[in-house]
Length: 358
Image (cartoon, rainbow, N blue to C red; front, side):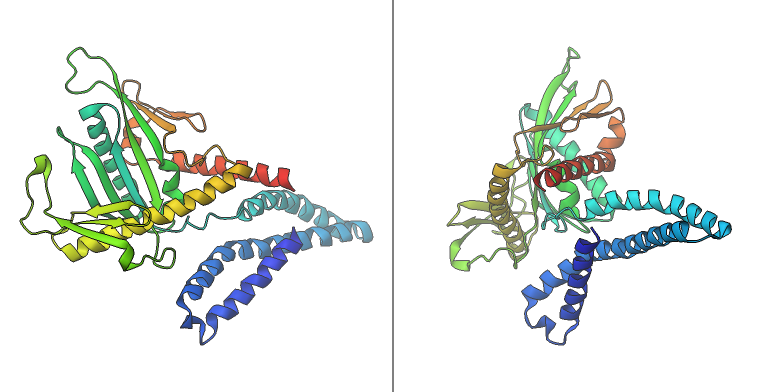
């Protein structure tokens, strides 16, 4: 392992030189890539320095025990060895996790789409509940949220809502939320007190930067229309809402959140770029899936991932069989525990796959 870590350390020093050179910013695309690589390598290099010292201490303690005749020195070396070996074992596991290849999209911002599924008005209300849950979670992480587009439900909630979320490692945290979320509760309109099951689909896309996807203006058709509010009423009489169509792929994105057509265009373009980037990413994932597929992030959007049962106050995460009876906290944005457990399960599967391929 030390050889592998030493090679990473050498690469870290090489990248450090490259980004510090006077002409580093002449090629902005390469500079961004190198800066990201440097940031990704830093925690591994820090761990390597600590690990190297531990290995050295263990070797030194063993040598003292086997060569010295001084009982006091020997005793001190034994104590040192007893303390260092468990630390090294812990670091072995930590470094294995650090060496798992990172998803290059993890550090990106995200575009989240929430769509009401089966269940009529109740599904729209649930989509609204999920939106508020994610906004609360984003606030607790110090992330910034920006509404892109919304289609209101007939009795409250949303038929569809799209939001940009920006901050530190947003996509890496939220990618596990993609899939079908199911709610079991008694709707307000239900007179018999029967529990109904409704669903909403959450889609989380990594926000693509201009470096990731190059869109030619000639390939984009722009349509403008009047923004509409609940019930189809006109929000304003100017054609400020924007719908963009990427002609080669047929991908569509729209935005009517801002009064300015220019701002709506910029937001819609961001979503369009992210959707096309995600299509390319999906192709790559499908290709990878032929060789290996992890249970946690299979990318299947039709998969039922989580159930929110109101009568029992229960939330069940189906992918890892985790059940918690803290529904109210979860709906208030306390979902970090689920994300952490899903990441642990994902890393465990990647480690298992990695060791079986060695």
